[in-house]
Length: 468
Ligand code: HEC
Ligand code: HEC
Image (cartoon, rainbow, N blue to C red; front, side, top):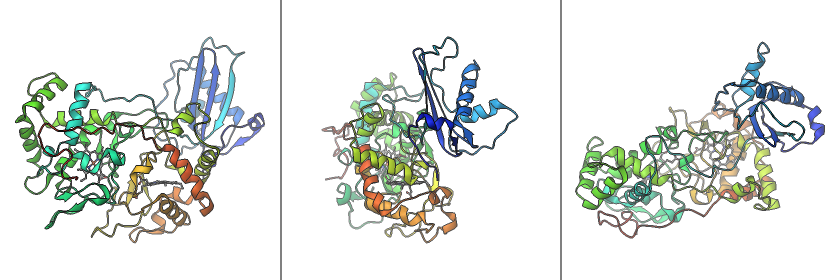
């Protein structure tokens, strides 16, 4: 298991550092700040790390590769010192190499798994710069059931601001449903299946795929529990095409987008809004529908939770017991997967969450391996019930599940004990730690997001579909 320490005293400089941990080297001086992060792959002395960092600093024009996986294992290659530096160094911020004021500089070495505050601003992909007109249009589309085959479901049906743009329901009900959240039911008679997964929150999906260096590529952002779609722009089209989510049975997957585009073209208000948002005539097409919705979704960000405030320097933002909870969370081994600013490595792992009994077939996840993408741990207050199929109702149940799998016992009939992710065995979680971890997780909730609901949508249909 990856052990975690925070800041270490001078004595530690003499110590040998074990491999497998993420190290952070910070050097402050009046004219420069250097932050180097990396995983140690071989046992090293801290003095050697400092030396490597120094070496890196002195090689001007040295291109640091963006390594997206800080936990990747690389073996030691003593032939080239640069090689080691490459793997040690993950990120360089403002690395000045020349006239550095040595006398005033302070060296600190931190050993930590990297969890951090979210960036304070949001990046958009080059092909979809945001504008107020575009986000306003995207918001209306998000609330308008005109986008669904039977005009009964909108995006907001399953991603409502009252529930943090997620849904208090284990698996979603789309077409032919009525009601909101836990009250949502199928109308009778019904032939439409359940959506097989739990609706994720849209909050912070702008940051999906973010690396521990806080870098991310919005046009490559992984979407869904199995990361099968990249970018918010591409994602927004998928639910419209899916039978049980929005399409229904009257249109085929091939026809539905053309139908939706025709419907939008028939409404003068939409014609005008698309023209304003995209600056051209005839701007109504499926690609621009995706772009407008994505631009709206990028405004749904909560990057000022108490945890973020704490990480940005407000030491009082979280209580003593929550700080203890943070340490317990790290000691338990959770950040092996839940790391970076989103508390997700955005990678697949086999955990064996129990099946949902409402579904007749097991959801086999990514490439039929029963792996699912690590979800964010932000705003868990809104994402209950938990896991890809909502099979665990509370955080306490999630932690009890981790306790069970940490001893190597699969909780899914189709997942053999040996198939569990190796990092699961690194977990060290006891009943007495659970409430402490939960108190820390609560610091990741941030209630400050746009909860305003449009009074009407241009189609004149009920806002949000059949949700009342
Ligand atoms: C019937 C309920 C339902 C509707 C309607 C719906 N979604 Fe979802 N949404 C879900 C479910 C369930 C998932 C997870 C699906 C999966 O992983 O396969 C999801 C996942 C997502 C994600 C991925 C989040 C992440 O972190 O990966 C985004 C973004 C999203 N939906 C946006 C939308 C948009 C935009 C619309 C409207 C065009 C929409 N949804 C309509 C239920 C719904
Ligand atoms: C091996 C990687 C890994 C480790 C270690 C790990 N998790 Fe997870 N976590 C995941 C994955 C993957 C999922 C989604 C699994 C699924 O849906 O089947 C998940 C789901 C969750 C969820 C549900 C979130 C939601 O919105 O549904 C919570 C809460 C959670 N983990 C907390 C923790 C805590 C606390 C720890 C430490 C005790 C931990 N995790 C350790 C990978 C991991």
